[in-house]
Image (cartoon, rainbow, N blue to C red; front, top):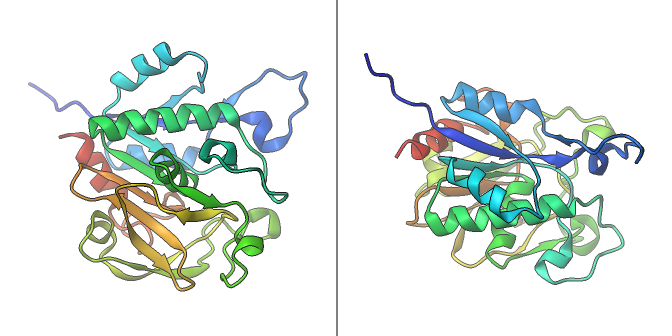
Length: 251
């Protein structure tokens, strides 16, 4: 009896010190929230964590070649030097090895049309990899914006519904979420300023901030600014996004 091989999906990691300020004398570690892994496994994928081997492109390339898809999850701020801008005073923690690893692997995936899904920071990586720029602090640089930084450190649950986004019906994101007004959580202080080349905005917040984008007509390359992994499959803010992504990796 033959069985269908479940697709192998890479999930990038983050340096532990960049998250919690762990003392330097402790061993450097790479970590990632388990919710991303559980969401992919529930959708039929086989998740594998990707080490941040920014200085070892050959090994990263070998890891990449074995993957059927790439998921870039949420995390700390992207260093604006990556998109050729000076650092703002309100820039948060950064993780340079993660920046290099994710931008490199994202570009490989886009070149090869290997399915890509970006969540929160992952949407920003998708845009930056294609030449886009970011608001380094939305509140300060875009003062007419609504509130987006509903962080757990400020007492908000990670599944707190913060606002709605308008999703384009004729899009992969629309196929997954159904289009129209969709309630989402919100845990970010940065956001897309200039959208990367070839991307189309497919989810917009009421204040005009881009909250979802994708490449049209080139496989599955989708990013959202919220955290759908915090919700069960079928709920409004996640729909069948993970299922559609995993299905694309089987092609």
